[in-house]
Image (cartoon, rainbow, N blue to C red; front, side, top):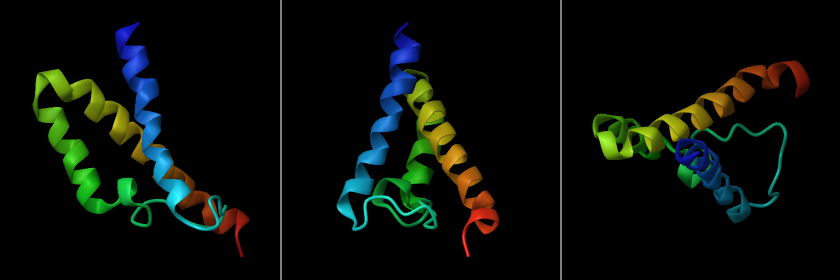
Length: 80
């Protein structure tokens, strides 16, 4: 149950979407645009994998980034 809760909490990095206007743009790639989706942040998330106490956080955050990246790959199909 604890691991499930941690994985759900990794969704909190989407709060950085509230810092831009418009908050949601279906044709904007989050990777490299939002603060918590920046490349330095992604490196930090990867470093979390190296330490056992933070490994599950790293997995959750990198999974979040991977799913956002998949959305970026699909954008040419639904954005002009």
